[in-house]
Amino acid sequence: MRDAAFCILLVLAAVVGGCTTGTGNSATLTDQPDTIAPVSYGGRAIAIAVDVDEITTRSPEAKQFFLTGLTSSTEYARYNESLKYFDAAIAIDRNFTEAWYAKGVALHNLKRYDEAVLCYDEALALDPQNAAIWSLKGAAFTDAGRQDEATECYRRAAAIDPRY
Image (cartoon, rainbow, N blue to C red; front, side):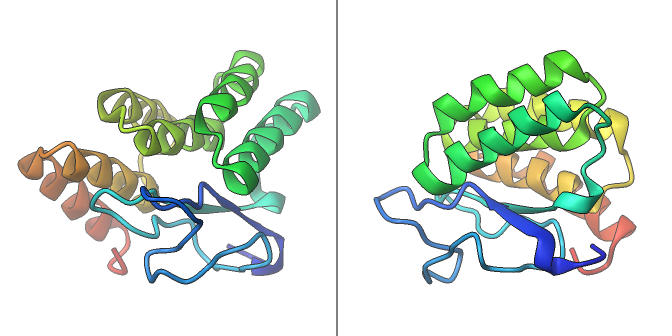
């Protein structure tokens, strides 16, 4: 990402109350990760960061729905509510990569892993060289107990970007 100062955190909640990152520390919208990456796996909610300057849609309406969905997920852990905003963004722009994988993250946090994988597949159809999305898909497979498929996703992520 170009400028981490414009990152927004998505979906920051632990399975058992409170908002935590993978380290257990509190996270807020002021946290500034410099990549799009999952924060934690294994039954905890996951989080991603999105650089506002690199949002791919050209539609201001789709972008607004997307940002509202992020707020709903991030500030209030209202994953079900955020889905309607991500769906609205996708209805306006079916090629809105970030909306697809943000929807996948919300579904993942609702433990709806198969649906999350379908969203990640839509995002990967638009951006097949995105290591973060491959890693998110791997996390969904891991949490669904499908380790062989998870391993393949992690392998593909690492082939694109060795940091994964």
